[in-house]
Length: 132
Image (cartoon, rainbow, N blue to C red; front, side):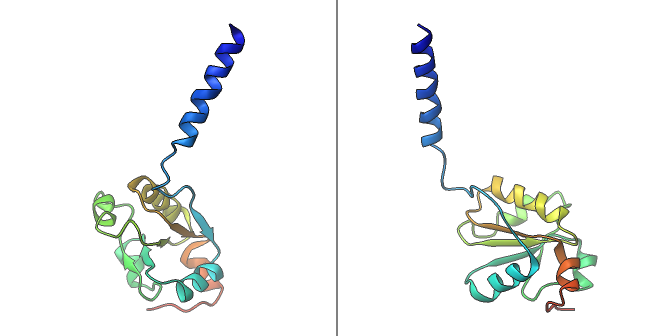
């Protein structure tokens, strides 16, 4: 009887792991600023999102970025207007808010998500180009 319970439990576990939804991102890529820069330069159709406040964005941001503040209540509504099938790359000031945003984007259903480690501060420190 115990063996039957174990086999049944394993069968159920295998069934659910085999039926995992692959339409959503399975993990979030965390890239250092140079990797992030290189991906922006070589990949096509990246949606680049700065999740800082509009005031922070106005002080300087990455070229081509759109500003959608993760702290605003309409963040999910705004990102749902983007294409779930295109890669989305996010960054913030130091990496904390963008990590939070990346998790939200995963829940929303984006397929490919990248988060910049160290944020805009590290980008600037590394001497990478920005828009002011």
